[in-house]
Amino acid sequence: AQTVTQSQPEMSVQEAETVTLSCTYDTSESNYYLFWYKQPPSRQMILVIRQEAYKQQNATENRFSVNFQKAAKSFSLKISDSQLGDTAMYFCAFKGGGSNYKLTFGKGTLLTVNP
Amino acid sequence: GAVVSQHPSRVICKSGTSVKIECRSLDFQATTMFWYRQFPKQSLMLMATSNEGSKATYEQGVEKDKFLINHASLTLSTLTVTSAHPEDSSFYICSATEAGGARHEQYFGPGTRLTVT
Image (cartoon, rainbow over all chains, first blue to last red):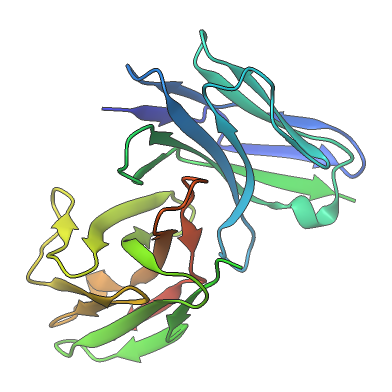
């Protein structure tokens, strides 16, 4: 079974600075998908960024980028120019490459952006 | 696009009663929907997977007779908590995947906060 580990329960960063959230996973599959979801205080899950394992290029979405290290099974999220609205729980998630859309979530990292 | 709604957003019920939560995909057809439970400051815990027109698949430890799931159409799944007790109080989230979707994503509803008194 796949596992997803987020080793940082809580992190904080000053507004406008850069922060990196860690995520490692374990799988025997070669094709899979990785996601970072944000859950703000409203508790609505919001997709931040996704990465297909077959793509070598790291995904980027505006201020959000990932460092995907397939051999090391690492998938970290970098948030640049942090904003107060980035304060949220961040969940790393894994999906296998088959037709099963089931996600395996990490335990989450609570990020606080300080003014 | 890819909007999922849940109703109600909050519900309070008395112990022993049943409560139904609806999950709808508003602008796409969802062949598969998922139901999660989330305790404060914890991750999402998958309860069950429902496919349109077939019985739901429950995760280990989830009582299928207590948490009834019906996925009657490609846009609607319901979760009924039967004979609710205070320990069922939680935040329930549904998600849906688009039929034939190439992005392999789950689209999440806004959640339902259930309080059992």
